[in-house]
Length: 286
Image (cartoon, rainbow, N blue to C red; front, side, top):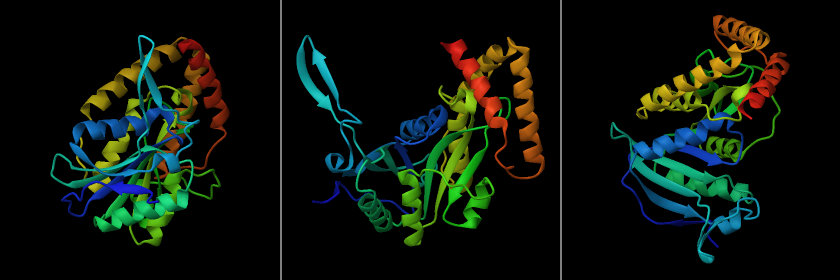
């Protein structure tokens, strides 16, 4: 049985494939909100749908049942799609959106790479966000995972060797590398202590990074305004406690030194600092 169904062959020229799959690390809903903004800004059509019965565990991602006056009127099933459209400048886009597969990762990667190759994809960019020991008072920075040192350096990266659990995006990057298609993961660094709440600045940073790297044009003004509002709300929470103001100041000093060095410093013991502040802010929001 085919892992996907092809619905149309869009008229695309050297498209960029943007990947945003739910279910893995997405601090502050950075990637999900960025993908939603992209889908809102760009008129797209469904190119292919993947077999969710074979790829997903429906007990982990249950369909939504609508009940009207006690009557079951239908189910809304999760969808994993490849969509196509053009940005404001007329550049061709492919978008891979939906839940991260639970099963058949290798087959899913092979199918996705095959579709990307068929449509002449020139670059693949994944979106993500992870919690980091950084303050909310500084601009959100991106870190990359990539199929080449040149791509990683174009975005910025955390130096050293990290062994961490991987999502399907990591498997896709490897599959694209094997196929000779350049791929990069754009990861927004979200302050630990706001990772559980929406953080629009991360979403704006991801789309701005996509524009800089791949030329994909999306208006991020609304996201930046929402990010400023969020920053002011966090400022109000932190201002009530001198101890936590000091903690934020320590994170600021750490990040400023990192920027002056022209890159990313090693992961510091600021994890404990951020974790304490996270507990504080969660207690305030609760």
